[in-house]
Amino acid sequence: MTALGTPRLHLRETTSTNDRARELAVAGAPHGTLVTAGAQSAGRGRQGRTWSAPAGHALLMSVVVRGAGDRFALLPLAAAVAVTDVVGEAARIKWPNDVLLPGDDTDAGPGRKVAGILCEGRPQEGWAIIGIGLNVAVRVADLPPELHATAASMERSPGELETVLASLLDALDAALGLPSDALLDRWRARDGLAGREVRWAQGHGIASGIDGLGRLVVALPGGGRTALDAGEVHLERSR
Image 1 (cartoon, rainbow, N blue to C red):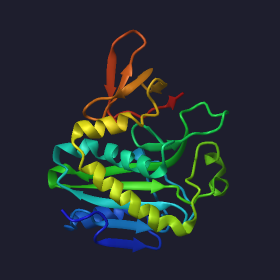
Image 2 (cartoon, one colour):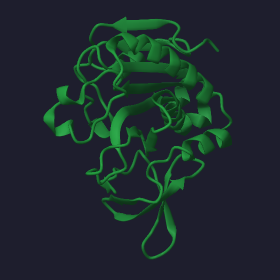
Image 3 (cartoon, helix red, strand yellow):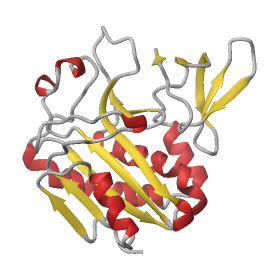
Image 4 (cartoon, rainbow, N blue to C red):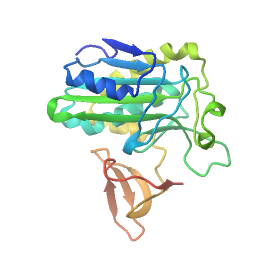
């Protein structure tokens, strides 16, 4: 397979790097094809949420992945492990697709969001997209007011975006090459939800890691456990 990042399409602005990468994948773009943008007008997260960042201050990227096969469900885990490796030792993963940095003493949750991950694709057709938005040089004060208490940044300079991108592509390539058990171990070592209460529409319990399919395992109040699938459940709260 070709290295991640080749070929590369860089756009000054686009609706969503995932949308452009999807178009390229459907048209037959090879494994590793990279789409980056300085700004997004319709950046997306899971379940239709938006991603907001000032132009030129966040790393906005999507990579075409070929041949994931039955490891498709593990792509978000590989992406999260790669992001935490680049962000630093303090970074933690909030299942299923956020990377967090520690907040201040007033924060009730597991941390503040420095990156979001959105994986999409059609495994039966042999392609997938890993989308990552990472606040590299974002000043939290420049974000919409409603994000001030929940967002974080690497606090690097805009001139370091390409350096961070190169490091992230190397880390992602390495994570994608890990055996499943090793990848799961790496993810669990960065788990920011373990031991915390989580709530969703149908219940609540204590987060207890992930299973071999990347599902969140939750210990239920009355005993027993359940596994939550990221495509079916939205966590209402974690604390």
